[in-house]
Image 1: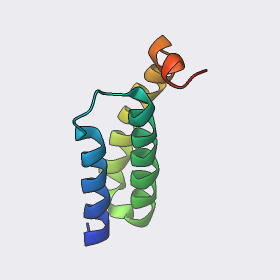
Image 2: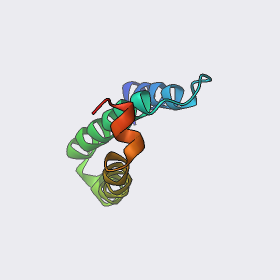
Image 3: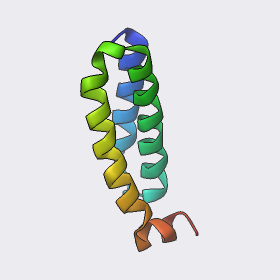
Image 4: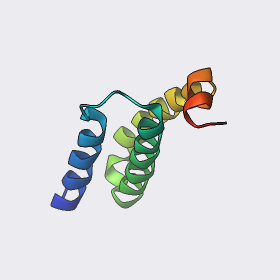
Amino acid sequence: MDNTEWGVMKDYKLILEHKSLPRLGKYVPAIEFFMRAWGRFGDDKHHLQPFIKPGLNKVKTYYNKMENSPAYLIAMCK
């Protein structure tokens, strides 16, 4: 990864490590950002697709489970 890509990963890590009370409302956008960024990264780096695609599929599995939970609905005011 180049410096820009490492910077994105460091920013993502900081979002998840924030010292305040965990809030699903911040976690969900971070996961969505991660999925978009890694999807684009995989599109640009075809030789890494065998590693990126299974990881994204796993994240999407848990994201879909989270999206169907009552906590998600409350946090996102739906």
